[in-house]
Length: 311
Ligand SMILES: NC(=O)c1ccc[n+]([C@@H]2O[C@H](COP(=O)([O-])OP(=O)(O)OC[C@H]3O[C@@H](n4cnc5c(N)ncnc54)[C@H](O)[C@@H]3O)[C@@H](O)[C@H]2O)c1
Image (cartoon, rainbow, N blue to C red):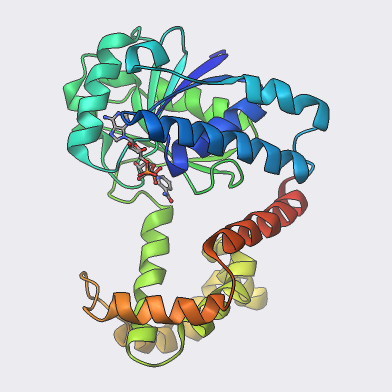
């Protein structure tokens, strides 16, 4: 599939980041949002991101104006999808909203245009029901921010053609992304299920008064998080088993880990005190740094790590 033009529908956090990513790769982008002000805000954010990528040496200085000129806003969905080969839907995470958008996309695009949803955890099986051409509909879930994080989870719905998944896998690989393919759909896909399993325990440790928000965050980012950036948990524990690998790891640590699992949180609704406790703890962790300071810190450090890991 030769992709020269992409429509981004929904221009919030994720849509604007996708726009910057694709433009930086030399692809034309048309952005549309149901809220015209948010569409222009998303456009400004995408341009700022291009400039950040230049400042970090990811885009060459003489390419910046070309990248920026590739990003346009559209006054309507129909105009946004004109002559595109791919739609990256990034609207609000809600079945009704996504279904309404997919119905319109299905009506206004040729049947060979791939319709990819950025959904963090909805099922395409449900969304594609409203389309006449469900085979070209799939989930292509990025990790925030998609202009930096390589992972894209490709998830079929029951009606998705295998060919659409294979095409998108090749497409993302060619752009330097790291796509993973789910064999069957599950709410939250892979990465968010793993992230939320960890976050439940992280919340519980704070709510139970076992450690501060700051120390729980440090215990992840200065410890296992560093290893996870290099290898996933299965391979890490394979190495943790020494010469005996995973076989020995399970025999050695299995009984101890069973007692940890038995004492872990299993709730499915956040405890009522969670918000207050986390908001206070995060204030302490941030000190006098603002949210935009933290965003910049995240992106600058991520870029340095990504250069080592993926260049
Ligand atoms: N924020 C994240 O960390 C993250 C990460 C990966 C994937 N996602 C997924 O990306 C999608 C967007 O999330 P977000 O965080 O960017 O949300 P957001 O609230 O920042 O942006 C959503 C945008 O969609 C627009 N919108 C709503 N209905 C619309 C319609 N009918 N037509 C056009 N635009 C419409 C809204 O006006 C808004 O600007 C969601 O499916 C979410 O699950 C989010």
